[in-house]
Image (cartoon, rainbow, N blue to C red; front, side):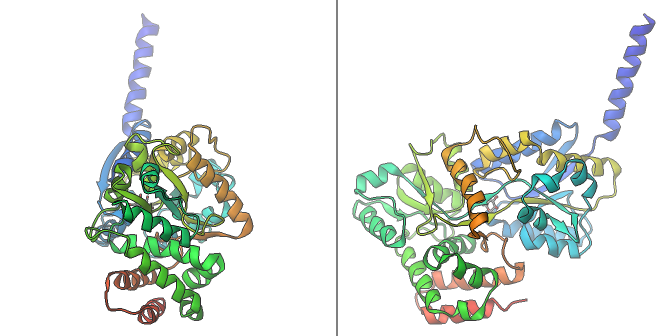
Length: 415
Ligand code: BGC
């Protein structure tokens, strides 16, 4: 009897202790499409399994521009969320403001330095201390294609830009929209970046879009890139302006359009629609980019918090994000690959396996490059200015290639 009562007392005090430690984590993200929302749910479930509660702070808008605007106003008013989806050089910008929390203890306990490729770990650190935790590696230089549409058109899935335009002509002749595109500036920029990589190669890409070298931005190669980029537009439909990226993916899923140039979050949409890679859809490197990899790493910056229970919850979330279980379930839904080294890939499809292999291979050959369109390559100010210039050119009927080149080069000087 006594033993039973004592047991009950211990159990009750454990519940109290758990409840006392349970915190809330408010998470800002922009994962609202079908595949993205499933991945976000996996994050939520992981946190809740630790006994904490999740406060969803989703701000719709592909590429995250709207989310960043909302985040700024929240932080300025002294009301930062616990975690926010922030990437690349922007992490340094936020850390400089002194608002990010030091996660060194979590990183040391969980051996992040050993588990992350140095190229990734360095992005997450400010002055040697972890201020963010990565969730995945997205590859941006992909082309998605509908095999039925290609069959109907008698077209071959392209591996270079000549083949791309030949396939586009055939799709058009068969009454299929050749290229599914969403006319939003970040999507125009995503297309531009893949064209730049495919037409110019990795050395050009690095000089022009990472180092922002003026001479390269005004070169012969840049002329070719811009001409090719604008030619892609002629194969998009008239309803493209303003369209969300996932609606463009849905056009390829339905076979209404033949191809889409988009990062592998698009795969999350195919998967969430029950489609099988290699059967219902094809993933292949964007034309001319098979030996290169534009990386886009999603990460969560952790903001300084006052409430102790919430700090504990925030640290539990950061630790859980790097666990192999989370990396698997999240990335299976998201379309990306795990960021953790040595992760078991047996449950992943061929697109992910290819991506994983290419991520490692391109790192060795120096053809692994940061995505400028997805906030990995340059400061947010320069990125925004170049993105606008590129998008203006895409949308203008009057701007010449030479004028576009000047505008882009001028935008690249933005500090
Ligand atoms: C993010 C992805 C997201 C995509 C579309 C990218 O910038 O890295 O996680 O799925 O935008 O919203």
